[in-house]
Image (tube, rainbow, N blue to C red):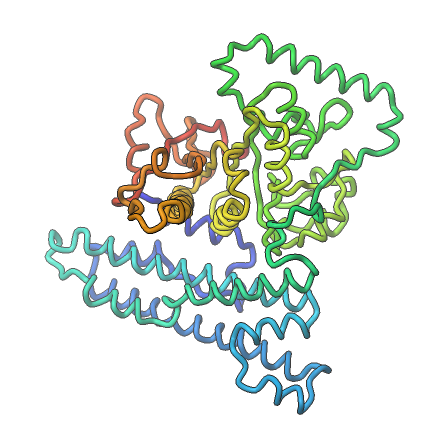
Length: 479
C-alpha cells in the first residue's frame, strides 16, 4: 500500500511558494477523499470540479509556455523578415532549440523550470484523481453506491493534463539544447573528460600547518585501528553516515560531511558502505547535500549561493561555492567514480528526501549512462514509499531494456516474470523504505513498533508490482 497522501504532502512542502497567486493548481486529494462514504453526489461534484480546474490550469500554462517561446524568439533583436521566413512552420523541437540559441541562459533556465513543474504537477493531479476513483469504488457496493471507474476514468484520460507524458519530449529537447549551448556533449555525463571533476581545494594554511596534518593522521590511524577490531560480519553492515566526518562540522581533524574526502577517507580506512543525501540542482545535476541550502557548511554562510536552496542553484553556481574545508559540494557522479577507483567493496547508500521524484528519475538516468557505476550503489532509500515504488519500477524497466538487448531476437522476460538476480545483466541496488522506531516527530515518518512489525508488509507492496526490498529503521528522519 503506497502512501500517496503522504507523498502529495511532501510535494507541497518541498515548494515553499505553493499557494502563491500564480502557482499551479493541485488537486485537494485529502479533502475529496473525506467525501467518500458521505454522499456520492458530493464526491462527484468535488471530483468533477477538480478535474475541470486541473484541466483548465494545464491548458492555460501550456499555452503560456509556447506563447513565451514564440513571443521571445520573434521579438528578439535577432529577428527579421528573412528570419521569420526561414523558420515558418517550424517544428516544436526546433522551436525549443531556436529559443535556447537566441535567448540568454537565465531565460532558458526559467522556461526549463516552468515546464518541469508543469509536468510534475500534471502527473500528480492525474494520479490523485485516479486514486480517488479507486478508493471510492473499493467500498461502493457495500455502501449501496454505483462504482465510478467506467464513468469517471474516461473523463480523466481524455482530459488535457492526462497527456502530460508528451511534456517529457519538450523537457528532453530543452535539456539537450541547454547542454549543447554550454559547449558540452549531448549528454555531459557520458563524457570521460573531467569538465566537472571535483577536486578538493586544500587551503595553503592547512597544507603548511603541521599540527593539523598530525591531527588528521591520528584520526585516520584511530579509524583503521577501530575497524580492525570489528568482526568482518559486523563490518560489512557498518555504514559511515555522510562519510567519515566531524558531527560538529569541524574541519581540523576530519573532512567535512558529504565531501569527497569524507567518503574517500572512510573507504580507504576500511569502511565498505557510506551513506549520503542527494539533491537535484536547477540544471538537473545530482549533488550531495543534506540541508536545503549550504549555509551551514559554507565558508561564507552569508553569500547568496550559500543561502539559496540547492534546487534553485545551477552547477556553475555550486562550483563557485566553497566549503569551510576549502572543498566544494561534489557531484554524485564524482563520488561513485571515487568508489570505483578505490575498488573492493566501496559502495554508497543513497538517501532521497521525501517528495523528490525528480531526483529518482535523474538517478536512473545517471545509471543508464554509466552502467559501470551501478554496482557502486548498494542501497537507495527514502521515507517516501510512493517514490521508492516508482524508483523500483524505473530501475527494473531499465534492467529489462538491457536484458532485451542481451537476448536479441529471443523473447526476454516480462516485467512480471523478471528476476533481478537471474535475468538482469547488471546488479541493481536494493530499494528500501525508511521507518522510525520511536513515536514520529514529523508527519511523514512511518512508525513501526518493534513488537508489532506487521504494517511493514503492506507498505512494501504495491498492487501486483514488485515489492520493495525491505525496510530500514532510522533513529530520526533528520539523520
